Amino acid sequence: MKYRTLGKDLTVSALGLGCMGMTGVYGEATDHAAMIKLIHGAFDRGVTFFDTAEAYGPFTNEELVGEALAPIRDKVVIATKFGFDIDLKTGERSGGVNSRPEHIRAVAEAALKRLKTDRIDLFYQHRVDPAVPIEEVAGIIKDLVWEGKVKHFGLSEASVTTIRRAHAVHRVTAVQSEYSLFWREPEKELLPALEELSIGFVPFSPLGAGFLTGQITMDTKFPPGDFRNLVPRFSPEARKTNLALVDVVKGVASRNGATPAQVALAWLLAQKPWIAPIPGTTKLSRLEENLGAVNLTLTASDLQDIDDATAKIIVQGERLPEAVLKMTGL
Image 1 (cartoon, rainbow, N blue to C red):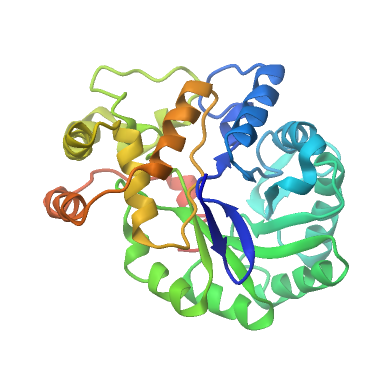
Image 2 (cartoon, one colour):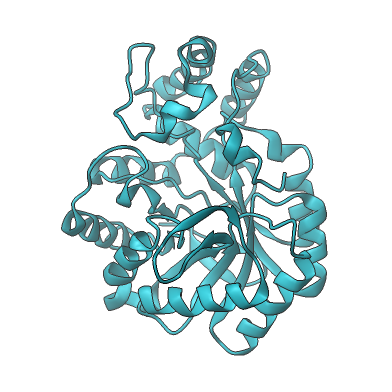
């Protein structure tokens, strides 16, 4: 495994593991013991960066990650998130966001218990709360850092303006947003700002929710409960156009003796040395395939070919359902 630094001093494996899908989301039933074994398998293969959130479940994902990582807690980095309006006793969702300082503190205390730990290594605001100034959010995180309950502050799906305002109150170590060959919007404003401020970047959905693996075709039907049934980019009409992007990745993979997933991840790793993607999976074979990207070095010619070919493709469909897009700070 190779390692990267987020912000000034948070060292993580070059590829992390997104754990969200281990407790649902993609419509597939998962076995608790099998997911514990998968997380252990990731660590055995060098992964030290694990991503979860109170909203995944709610709560069940943090409990899973906490149980799996308890025996190796001091050897890993755990990232979790606050920011949705979730009742901490019942898990009932309001459908909105909540970053009131007192709620953030309560979420942190609850997360510490579920994660079986005394500190959260990276605590992200999951979605920006327009009702709470980001300075107040950064202020309570600063207090939690001083108390030793949080080590690093992160933001997810935040605008450059929001990031700058938060960073002025307390250093932001990492920003998490979607980024892949399927969604390159961060290249316009976000990546230059993060480089200027020395903030790390953690792309979620680095394989385009599975699209860039080459396993999804026009005939693919997602199971009931799979969120991709609601994502405009995966509609039959959009898919017909978007598969041209996969063809580009497949071409580069073929000449490198790699898989499309490995090329897509290697492309991300080649963009900046402070980028650490967090592909998710529930299968050991996919985990091993993804980790192969760490040692795949794309040539300048490969990268140029990808840029030239993808510049001619206009990806169709929104990246998230409309209701989710409304909650982003971008």
